[in-house]
Length: 107
Image (cartoon, rainbow, N blue to C red; front, side, top):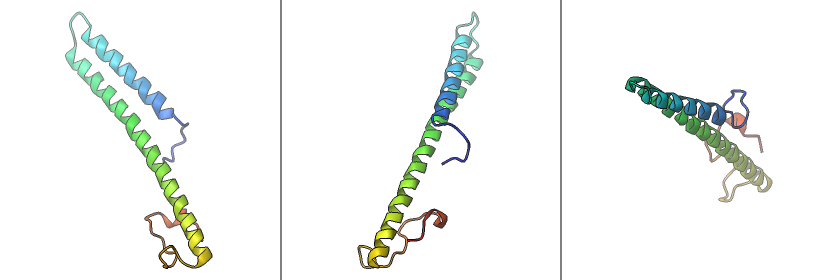
């Protein structure tokens, strides 16, 4: 997850508003008495970039949640392994995932 202090959904509002603004400017440039194709293309490209940022931020949030769930499952596995002295396969409680050790509590 990002360390940036942002409210949930912040990126949706900001980037979607910017996308709409750039699309409006592109439409305005094309509907002028003398269409300004270059200006319209620039604003259309900026709109696409802003829309891409919505996707990027959403994927970042999803990956952060998946990592948190992975750590929670690993901690549960370590706890269970610690109670009976081994994991399901008779091995010790060594970690089976790739995670920052600081995120994993000691079982």
